[in-house]
Length: 272
Image 1 (cartoon, helix red, strand yellow):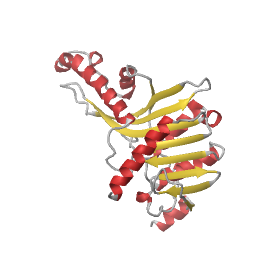
Image 2: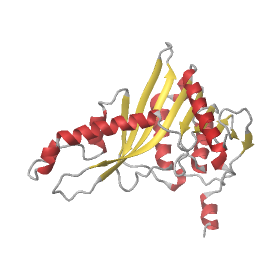
Image 3: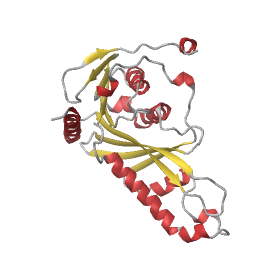
Image 4: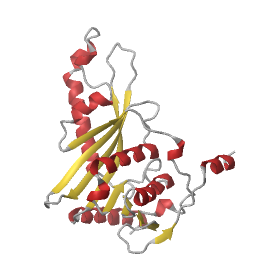
């Protein structure tokens, strides 16, 4: 079996198995990004409004044994800061740690995502997990698993489809008003992230967080060295201050590695 095909089956089977045996105090997370383009009213000068949506699907067992599945959408429409990158992921996870009281309620976190080279499978994001484990999670384990390329439909894709279905219905219901240039804009579908969040509340088991902007302070972004063969790895583990990488997510063999962080002044000097 070709390596890529083997990766596909190995990762998909491991994710399915992990979902089937979620343990108490284990947080299982599926992450993805989607973009939504809100259509302006005909005759108005407003441009298409782009809303970035960081979708986080959570599964865990409550103290009474009840299994919970929750969709959280982090929205931002600020044109100057709503890029789907490390800064967006960091801001979403800081919000998650605060709202879910993760350090008190969980002992391990398993995160699954695609291999997005701009936001997930980067040295910046991996360094972020290492920092969160040490500074916000009392050194407890955070693992980031990656699906193989072209892994197919996921829970996050299903949630994204339900969001776009709700917005499409909003558009269709207000289509006549859109063609009427004298009709007040309030009569037709959502024009920004805040209005979009109201419509999204129709989706089942969904919470929405709207960021007015994404904090892009350079001090929030570390400058670690490149990770060797990062594209080949399908799992990274961070616990007790140590970092491990593994090619198959379900494999027992892990490689120990460490981050070398340059100071920002040193980084700027070397980049000149």
